Length: 464
Figure (cartoon, rainbow, N blue to C red):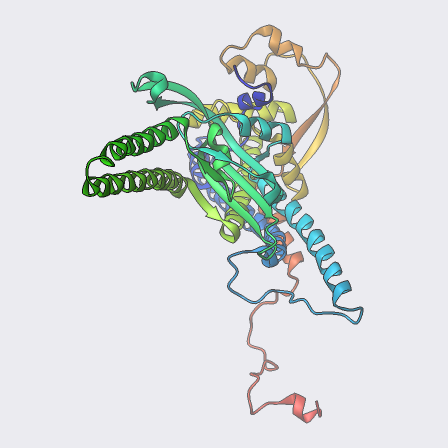
């Protein structure tokens, strides 16, 4: 029976599993676009990507700077080395600790921003506890001490069910295929509390993590031995010790040479038992290391850089999809809800992605913020040719009841979205760059331009 807190496993995926160049290639193949429009749409995609990259650049650098004092892999000097004040070392240390706590809170918010933009979802404490309580049938048994984690956040992106082969004593060592739930991506942010080490924060990204094995992505876990392995080691140790002991009792009455031989056998049995324990433990460690080696995507600063890149890509894809369909189908009056369904329908038709939950509010918000789209008020007309009716009619499993239930009545107003045409959109994007960097002048030969060399030191002539 599925845990009641694991109901989120059936949620739709917000991540668009198609790269932006692939989306653009499919858009440019649209017959509704002329050759000139294709060229302009490609330029629009390039300028959108550059604009979003620049907007994320400052935030990314800010979060990287916040992460610097917590980075366990840092090989450079700290950005802001601490220095005691005149209030005394004790007061300085208290102030430094408070500053680090505040700095970590800002870092946490920044990492969450990029994770959210990358369409990751944070596990609630209840959901995380439910995942931690689930027992692994294929992985290792581990134990976690929560006291060694000051703060820990776990995010996921993409949940699907797969069939995995299980072979254990429960199935009488016969391979049996069973369904398991898998996180496509997992992000873990951990602030440790080890007093022997400097305050550090770990950021790790993993792929293809079975939900039952989610606890293995946490640092400093303790590997537990399965009861079957414990029983096998104990049986071997007891059998190897008690048998020589019995022989020892018999040999005492016979010969001292026999006693020495039996004692050596007892010691050998004890050594074999200890060796078996360490061999089994080493096997567990190798299994854990082997699994995480192939499932680990990035760590610490490289993980943060990957998240920044992924969030930029998601922003570009969402904005480009919304603009493209509003432009090529400009003869239709789409509300936000209707455009949301139309984009999801387009993704299902073009890439066989029926389960994508497109974030229309975020996409339209980006277009409006960049002054590429506007919202207008229009009066609804009950007509089968409206965009909503056409979308519902072309969707599999649609019915007339579901089509009309979401439609406003005759005469009600609708908030429809329109985008500027391609030349206007390109000009608006270009104007933003001109306003951002107002230093442009045509590069022409100017007699006042001089090279700053030894032959022309104006600062010396002015006594500076």
